[in-house]
Amino acid sequence: MDVVNSTWEGLMKKTGFIYDDRYLLHDTGGYHPESPERLKAIHSRLVETGLLEKLILLEPQRANQRWIEAVHNIHYIMKFEETCMYGLTEFDHPDNAVCRDSYEIAFLAVGGVLKAIDGVMKGELDNAFCAVRPPGHHAEVDKPMGFCYFNNVAIGARYLQQEYGLERVAIIDFDVHHGNGTQHIFDHDPTVLYYSIHEHPSFAYPGTGREFEVGIGEGDGFTSNSPVLPGKGDEEYQRLIMQDLVPAIKKFKPEFIILSAGFDAHESDLMSGTNLTTYGYDFVSDVMMNLVNKFTDGKVVSVLEGGYNLEVLPELVENHIKMLAGLRSF
Image 1 (tube, rainbow, N blue to C red):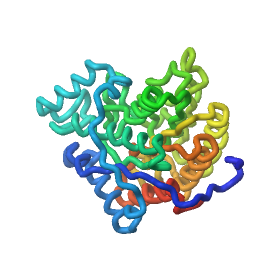
Image 2 (cartoon, rainbow, N blue to C red; image 1 turned 180 degrees about the horizontal axis):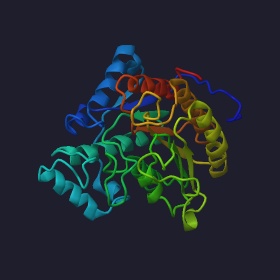
Image 3 (spheres, rainbow, N blue to C red; image 1 turned 90 degrees about the horizontal axis):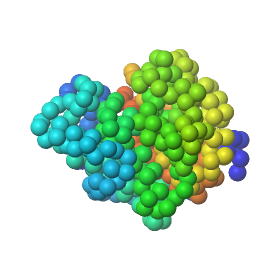
């Protein structure tokens, strides 16, 4: 099947869904955009539309710390634990709101991603969506950033390599903000391909993710960034994804794809200066599934990152999950 020219349509998939009410315990305060209401809205939508009944519900378990240490510095992990233990309300920066439960819930978010990976690798699932929080793609090896504490997708990639022996893992990030943490973790690594499409760093947090950032040393050529200028929308996303992402995946030939699924590039999201529509998001999901089915035999785990408009976020996530499950075509 030609990824470029064809539209993916599939039979009903065994799609897992990671969710737990404990994720709501990560309390970021009354005015923080990364609030428990995000997951509540997603879960309520899936219940109301009946989609939840068609998914395989998975209960996350706390990740073993060894997998956190596969990515993050032990002293950083200890500092995070102490911050929460002392009852502080922010971790290094006001953006990074925390409470006493945040440390344990961050472990549970990682555990949810690993549970989903286990299900796919053992053949119990075809794919999975992880409705977890806190998000992770801004988290550096030893620094929290942008609402993120542990880098869920980066840990997932290391888990695939160390637990299952995979040699080539691709991470595709379509959050409106560049996943600086994920990129920097794998800067020197030729075994993990990192691709991100995001608002141009001159206009958006965190100020990284330019075209010339392509990896370092042995990792040169295994990072690809597609910055989108403010005001650009569906056509620009389509052009850049076909121009940059598809050839990179074809060349890399991943055995597994992890998605950093951010829904804050939508035209109605105040975090975004891009004009990606709901139709544009459907295009993104469609291309992802084409690539997944062509190169990884369907093996993909999608992990929630951003998305802050509580009216549109549930619809976008529902549509994305339907694509994963083979219940919706582009």
